[in-house]
Length: 346
Image (cartoon, rainbow, N blue to C red; front, top):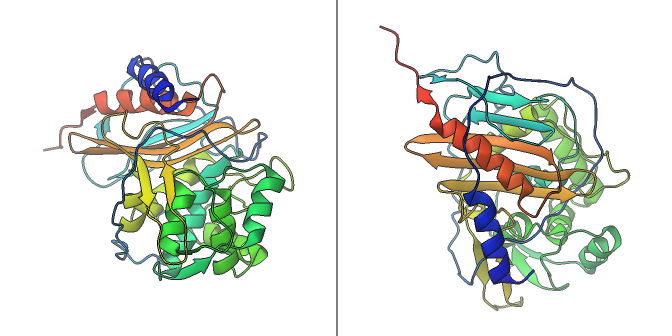
């Protein structure tokens, strides 16, 4: 689709979404039921820009075990939001929306039902790299990265074999255009090797208490089967909260585009963000898209408005259009931002 046409299509799709309210309920279709799926997504619009990225340490020690996955019974600290009704028109089979500051879950569907998460997988790949540190490390793109993307039909950041990019730049290629070639290159360097890196992904998930999450790839591509890599809305909420603690991560996922000029040892690159919320939904600051025929549209998202930060997940939104996941997310966010803050108890 041409850039101008895509801008009009996505803007129109998000503009018509309302924030209606109906009776509130959290529906969980059970744990352990896995739907089919894998990874990739369509590009969002953008234009050239070079942005300096922060490599600062996270706001908390990254190796510390995060809090357990939020749940409707979680009792967060701080003022609660008064939950009335529910978001209308959300078609995703799995979903969750929470207050990022307190962990209060506002609404959910199939919270612990395991489903393929497609390229949302790349958030865990980024987290493992960020925890390893040294984002200035220069990494050569192997020829195998090109072969890997071609073999499995993944999205590509069009990395040139032999180019040397920093880990920070490869994270841009991983998270914005959803490059499976960037995922392969990072996994090869930080494993070292794909099997060792996948083992690190699963070890990190275990440490974080993500009991319904499993990885067989660093990118969510559907191998060895369509259901090999999977997670749940609740687990992905915990993952998103952990990743957004890193300034270097946040500075990438809220960009519409990134331009890397030609430099010593590498070609020029232009990467657009696949997240249709960025630049179109007021206050959107991330996080990551995903799509395959079996996984449907998936989106881990966060937005800020009037001092309130909401984070959420949609898994398997029907493929009704390029922005199907973003439309579900916008409906959830509109509803969440319409809720009132609870009055403090005397």
